[in-house]
Length: 238
Ligand code: GLP
Image (cartoon, rainbow, N blue to C red; front, side, top):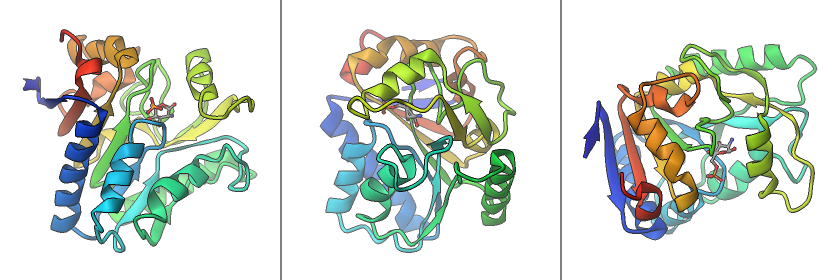
């Protein structure tokens, strides 16, 4: 099924989605073991990471690039998105090289510039593995967001603060973040967008059906080399 360049696959449930995502990622890593991979945290990709770990995929030459981090949060903080990425993806898969967003740097803008230079030195992103924010954000590219928005500090929207609160069991969600830029995401040679659950149905419909708009940052994926893997609950009647 295609939607103006975006390829959409609908899977029966979250488990089937994870298996299919793992198949696709495994294929890309086998083809290019030195892949640069932009890695989302959040709940959606976790089953995919578990599935990949089960397969004994050799990801030792992959470079994992961090997608987002809360501003001011260091790796010892339980809310560290780097910590989440390390536990869920980097360590289980034996990834040795990472490019991180330093959200405790004295100058966050400079930290973003360093991150951009490191990614550029790698030759950009080969595969972006993304979840869909409930407000259409990718990483923390909050609406409204233009396609040329770079890696930068951002203020989180009330919607993101609410959705992220579910991750941290009563801990306050930081109000700011660093996010990999929309430009870097849209420049990826290939993107996998994972969308699971009925609560994503409305925003998935807007992502795929509305004309690309700053109000739904994920809608800028239209026209890029993107595969959307959605489970039936998220797909609904689309
Ligand atoms: C979060 C993160 C994103 C994530 C998205 C979806 O706020 N900033 O990187 O992909 O929202 O999260 P989930 O998969 O938990 O629905």
